[in-house]
Length: 284
Image (cartoon, rainbow, N blue to C red; front, side, top):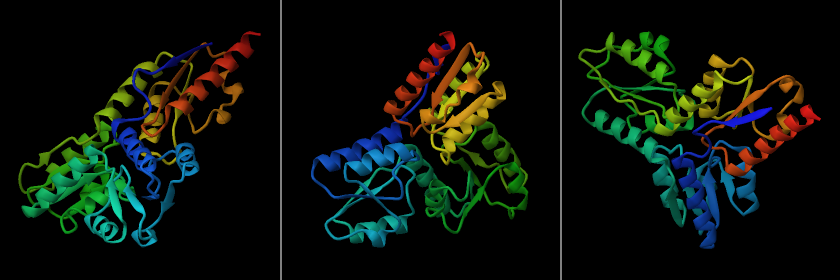
C-alpha cells in the first residue's frame, strides 16, 4: 500500500506564528493564558497545557501579572481593550489574514457602507470581524441566506478565511441583486486554505482512500474533507492515528493524506507511520 502526502498540508503561517509567540512567552517566563483554545487542535492544546499554558473563557479570567494571548481567530475591539485593561501584557496572535478582513470591514463601516461577510456566524473569526463593523456587518453562510438581507448600500463582500471559494463566489453574485451599486468583492480566503484544498483535490482523484488529519470542529479541516469526498468517497477526517480503521483500507493500493492548518507535524508523522504499518501488515 502506497501512502501519498499532499503537496500542501499542516500548520499554516498564522497558526505556526501563534504557537511560536506562545512558546516565546513561555521561554521568557510568562504565565500564559489564551482567550479560547489557541488553535483548533486538541492534541496540540494538550501539549501546550503540559508546558503551562492555560485556556480562559473571558477577559475577566485573567489575573494581574498574567500574559493574555489573543488567538489566531482574533477578537472584537471591545474584548481586546478589556484584555489590555486586565493583563500585564497582551500578545495579539491574530492571523494577519484575519486582521486584513477586520480592517476592511472597519474601513467600509466608517464610510457608511454595508459589509457582507460570508462564513459561519458562530465561528470565533466571524464574531471578531463583526465587532469591527457592528452596525453594518451581515454574516451569511452562503448564497441562500443573502435573499433575507435588507437592501445593501455600496456593500463590501469579504469571506471567512477558511471558506470554500465556490461558496464565496456564489454569495458574492447573490449580493449584486441586493445592492444599490456594484459591490466591492474582496476574496479574503487564506492562500494556505486555497493551497491545501487544491493540493488535496489534485491527489484525491488518484487514491483509494484519503485521510484528513485535523480537529473535528476545525472549519478548514471540515472543508478539506468536503473537497476530498468530491473525488474520493472513502475520505475520513481523523484527529489521531488511533481512529484509523484497518478494515477501511482492505484492498487499498494508494492512500492519500493531508492535514488541516492547525495540525502539528508530530501528529502527521504519527499518522503516516500508522498507515505504513497497516500497509506492511496487509503484505505480511
